[in-house]
Amino acid sequence: MSRKKQYFGKETKKAFHNFPLSISSAPLEHIYAVVEIKKAAALANKDGGYLSPERTEHIVEACDEIISGAFDDQFTLPVIQGGAGTSIHMNVNEVIATRATELSGGACAVHPNDHVNMHQSTNDVMPSALRICSIRLLKELVDELRSLSSTMKKQAKKYSKTIKLGRTHTQDAVPITVGQEFTSYAFIIDRNGKKLKEVLPYLYELNMGGTAVGNSINAPALFVKGFYHHLETITNLPMKKAGNLMSLTSSAADFVHICGLLVMTAADISKIANDIRFLSSGPKGGIGEIVLEELQAGSSIMPGKVNPIIPELVNQLYYLVLGRYVALVQATEHAHLELDIMFPTIAEAVLTSLKTLAEGVLLFNTKCFATLQVNKNRSRELLDKTTAFATLFTPTYGYDTVSRCVHEAIQKGKTFKQVMIEEKIVSAKEFERVVSAYSHK
Image (cartoon, rainbow, N blue to C red):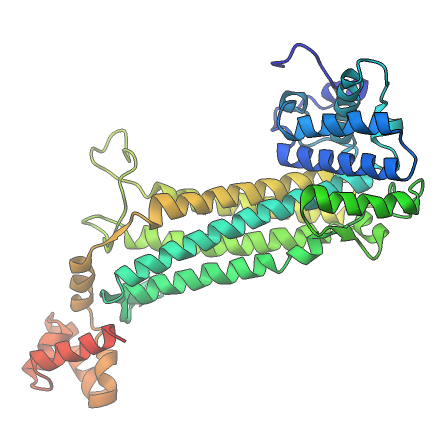
């Protein structure tokens, strides 16, 4: 600890002893969301006459300090533990209580359970906090996707008339333009962003006020009503009470929905990253249509080698997001009776996937797509060596005639253009006119 005083209490210390795991701590985004809930609860309890104004004042001040980051070193429990998140929840309660008591000068003792946790339970606080921070991280991811799409569209416009070889099954297919290819990437990203935004209404629904199992035991109606009013003000989010609190206490299916969309998004981005790796292969022994910025040495033994490190990073983030999705689905299915007891795994999977995917999209945007260049000469060279132009001439000269020229080009080791001109089917000028007309569509 960087701070001499420990603000957490005995329950947090027990958790450190019980779960000595060398894994990451609970994300601070989640901690802050729990603290926002505590602040809203304190104000609601004061409004209902359940908590004294003095205690409320000190709890609220302590919450504001924690949200500002002043007590980050007090929240270092491992993200995975038994107890459905109780350890992390108690950690927050204890730090708030200790600091609130300290702020009162010792004149007003604040208890972590009796006061900070009044009318609440781990089972409604922790998943509600997860929904709050998931909304924020999801919006950040959507913003990064929008920025990536914008970069792709700019590159598409820059290379809108650059004609190249389109490929299917990694085989020569038909002529396309770089603009068409990059525009399709942008639309893929846009569709994923739209799908992610569509999940937000489900996240706005909370089970706060349900307490232990969702039947609102020990949670007065007056407290619950006041809580949602204060929470909306504190978070600036349209959070609302779910139609059935017990359903959200026992099921985490909404988080499966989110992570399923994250897997789909990551898979699409990884597919694009694979394309970039494929098209930038070489530079001499591969395709070499795309040139990536040299970010670092690609080898400790091969001088001058450059690796596609950012696309490779994007591929690996997809693997991680997919793996966490599998863990999350298992944790959701193992919800027993009235409670999803595997909540820590769910929280880790959702938050880590949201954060790392947003970071990966940012890097793919700024360190790959924004800086890549298209080798126009190489693109046309590879296209000319193929028979892909044949498709453009079929409507005018017929399948059989064009097919004969294709076979002759392959057999004699000539280009399709050469054969078409030698056979006097088209002139060189007419050939280029057809190609140019296609690239300017």
